[in-house]
Length: 357
Image 1 (tube, rainbow, N blue to C red):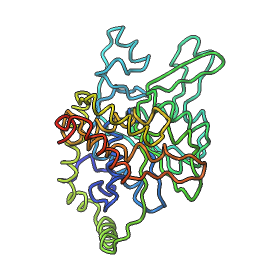
Image 2 (tube, one colour; image 1 turned 90 degrees about the horizontal axis):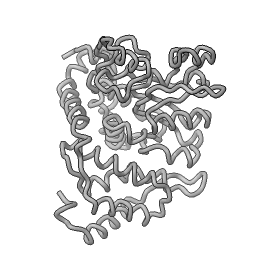
Image 3 (cartoon, one colour; image 1 turned 180 degrees about the vertical axis):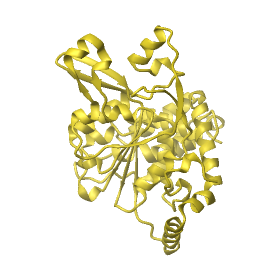
Image 4 (cartoon, helix red, strand yellow; image 1 turned 30 degrees about the vertical axis):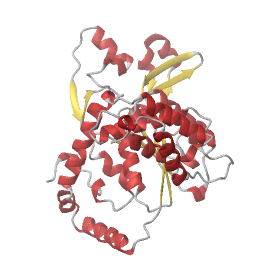
């Protein structure tokens, strides 16, 4: 079935062969942007950008305030820009329109003004946010912000992105004048390690990391070629073919978003999570925070309102590798066998009925 949701004619997310961990990490990040972004490491031609564009087509449409440059959510005043809030205070009616979730690309050569926006100082003193010429972070609010080759991005720009991703707000400061606007986006960065690594300080600020590589199975590679050929011949027919699977996935995403805030985690699991991070000599507290948010999102995606020990272990596959690197050029690797052994050891000391399926 061809609908307005697949009018962009991209290869369906559900048609991508293999790369299960990358697809899972992307799903978790869009369901819960508070995770703080996902970094995908891998060579070119491993379906990174294809997966991002295909995923956007699965996301539910959102309500936005018409003509608002930040696409404010009309149902949540706490996350609105100053201009929309002022309209509410004046009892003005906010016209609402529906819109697909967008993918905003951040080019490598983008300047700070292009990313955060520019500010007219004199006008800012008089009119506040009206003095702001919005940048890419304004367009990225309630969208996917995609940065290809993020390891080649200027460190200062990368810091700005990660700050906004963590806070959900873009703050512009010029000559003592400060203006801010909502910037709640799902950050997705991709990189080829052969072209250089990210600084450990930047790596730590990504919630999740996943590594991808070309598939080694001849059967899988043949399937990839056939699906690309199928898409080239008739994109519409291919999207219709994978439509039912896409609709099922879209329902799971929507359902997870709706119950995410209701997901609970037992204190025993929090203790297990912290003990595991300490056992792996991980110093940053972001490891536990990212693991907590990711485990709750894994549970929500499974349709559950309780976190299990298996969710904690799976979450750590994404949240720990990039936080274990000790030397600048050391590859981020997690010993999963050791992780499993540690989890099993700690599980025996806990209450099985509270942490097992």
